[in-house]
Image (tube, rainbow, N blue to C red; front, side, top):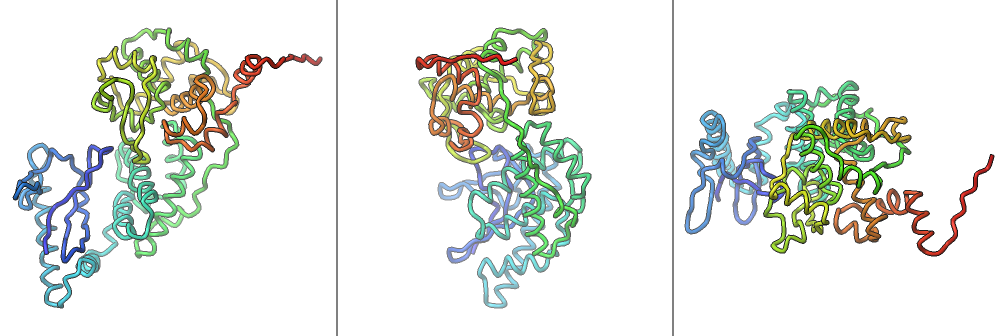
Length: 407
């Protein structure tokens, strides 16, 4: 039997949760330390050619406040060792038995924040949930709650899930450029999370179960090919806005989600400079994006080191440079607001879908292989959605298009 500190490194994550892993006779369980670390913040030892984390001092000086956190980690380690000895006296060292004893001692009432709730739910139900469902909680919901917490400078608790939270969280997601279907899914995950936690006798705010998902018939909007061309040759007044305009252009010609854009580095580019190869943060699926000339020009301009800023500042910059450049097309589906008021980083991804379908003439299946969006969604929202593109294709095929003006 062994008890060691352990991280499950993901290619698409810089930081990962530090666990204590107990192994016995081929079975193992994980105990979350609720500490998120980068690999280079850990003290690594090499034993018989294998790397392992130092159990005495897991964290090194690169982790801010490593002394008190190491002390807490050592206490948790010693506590689990004591439980293992108690389990040995009972004649049952099976990891599941040790985990149950640990959970009985640590009252679930200690779980207070939403993030702690996600940790407990995944730890408890991981073997019962599909891999994609675990990702919905561990990647998507965790990412959005963490971003919201950072904005509000508060670790929101399960008892904070009232109607005010619902409205403010939805508005936050809208400001992040999330589609209403995505926002609806986040609400669904929150409600499902709280239902699972209630099964574990963890107290949640009952108001969460009355949270409503968006029901919207609004159509998707994106930049037209003409708007893309105008944007490429336009120059905002400030250097910073010019940089963010270039990033937006790069997004429009790659379809990158903001979560993947912020992780971009030169190592993702193939040796022949024809593809960007990485794993999508949201889905953990491998994606291979052909580099179009417009995206290549941006990469060359910045020597493959794109000038990132925080997501919220980026979305604000998009609105600012589009307003400055007079991108004022009225978006009827957004309460007749001008484009510059409602455009976000996610609009760039939608623009790529439209460009790939309507200009590059790729099939929905081909675009799906690049972006990971389902062919059904692409066909529904992008294929032939632009009436000008429909007319252009009809003229190109020899069909006669007649404009009727009826007074």
